[in-house]
Image (tube, rainbow, N blue to C red; front, side, top):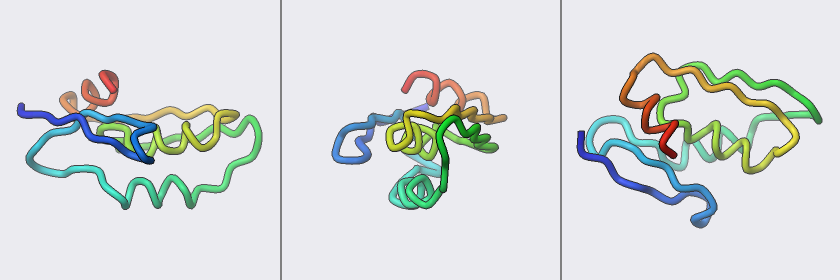
Amino acid sequence: MDISLDKFLDGKIKLYQPKKGYRAGIDAVLLAASIRTSKNSFILDIGSGVGAVTYCLAHRCSDVEILGIEKNKDYYLLAKKS
């Protein structure tokens, strides 16, 4: 699989993702920004792909626990690598 390393949030987050097929973009950033949390919340991201929403949310909310679940092994490995 051909992959790229892309920057999100002005380079504060770097994610590996496939060059072809679904690619995370501004939609993931906006979704992460719209999630309401409170201190010590637990967030479950089902179908997390390469982890764009998970990583953006974790950057914004350091006081929450986030678990991303992805069934596509390639996307899971890219999220882990990121």
